[in-house]
Length: 53
Image 1: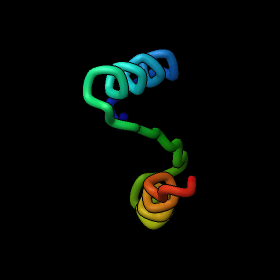
Image 2: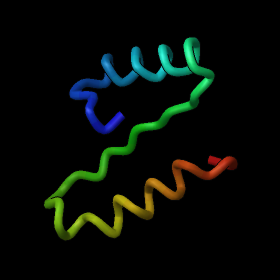
Image 3: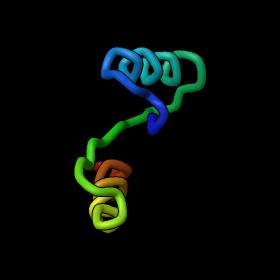
């Protein structure tokens, strides 16, 4: 999902992954400067990967 440039592409890729490979995928916007955002990126990835999310 990190490589999708647009929401429409993200939606298409998620649907394709689910239909063809039975893989559930999520994408998270983190915004801001990359270096100072690394902690938030990891935190949001963990939350997004949670089975309860």
